[in-house]
Image (cartoon, rainbow, N blue to C red; front, side):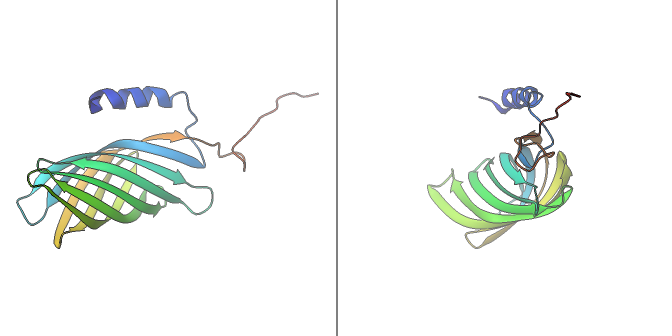
Length: 159
């Protein structure tokens, strides 16, 4: 399924779910300009993140990123204050031009509120990559902020 069909479907589905939660899933596209050992190039990705903001905000995300010669799978542990944060984790790079696979590490600094910008540093196979990007995220809450167990019930019975 092409990404241009997936995003509108996810957007429509989000209207049926609560959007202010202690636990939130976020999904969206990313576009990066990568500067590294070879000439600079663009890449695009789709990323899914799980956030728990009940006490200390923490998250784990995962993504798949595509460029002309490479596919990267990554996951990061992250934290932030809603509009800014940082994350770090492993990245697996599959070189499509040569049959090679490399394991690396990346860290990302970001600023957003549904639409954002980020700066990502990657180290893969002794090569440093500096990536500047933009992205959009669609939030889907799984639990209500009004209760400790996620089942907020308002009883309007005055008897």
